[in-house]
Length: 275
Image 1 (cartoon, rainbow, N blue to C red):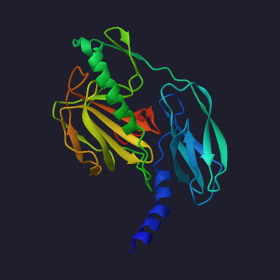
Image 2 (cartoon, helix red, strand yellow; image 1 turned 180 degrees about the vertical axis):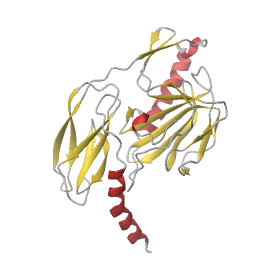
Image 3 (cartoon, rainbow, N blue to C red; image 1 turned 90 degrees about the horizontal axis):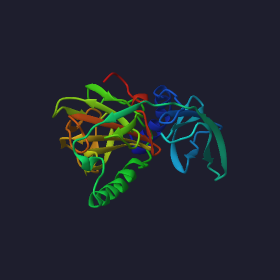
Image 4 (cartoon, one colour; image 1 turned 90 degrees about the vertical axis):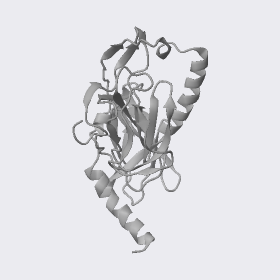
């Protein structure tokens, strides 16, 4: 079979696969909006939300945008900007509903993890630039797995979206879920991906970032050991690292984050199976 024929068959088959595996719609801050698009041709329209490219999938004869909604988004009407093959632009309106997340108070013995020094702040600033670049990665792919296997099995200790206080001081909301597991527990890739970034970071410790294609990126933090390298392709289920307590952590656990069109969303919305 020629490469061109194989690619054509893949493109024809992938829309049905995508439609069958769409995540549940939860159009709230930190959630996902499934937005029907006014396009029915064979080519997906290009969609953007706040300037960021959005994943578009086939649903029957129609197209739908799968939109990650930032935790800081305000409830109310929002819009996507569509660009057709002829270059013409149009907008589609959808609505975000309110959601209130609980609070979490954490006490840390290491005061630097709450109030870093100037030198540490400079390091954090450099690291945040690299992390943000990894989380907003866009790599075109003919098919993206939107139902992710659990990276580990363990005890959920912190859900997504918590308003966090460290030593009584407010910090950013929790942008993933924490799963406690014994030190050294293998962490598995939840779907095929390319490793876009690895490293040791001040707050997140040893981290791996996986690019699953079309704006879907997953993050794995606080590892004791990293088992992959940037640029490497990994299969679903492949070990990418081991559970640890590096960075700002009070015990061995995995912080698992999911970014969709550069918005941190609740990993539970894409989770296929129990932790």
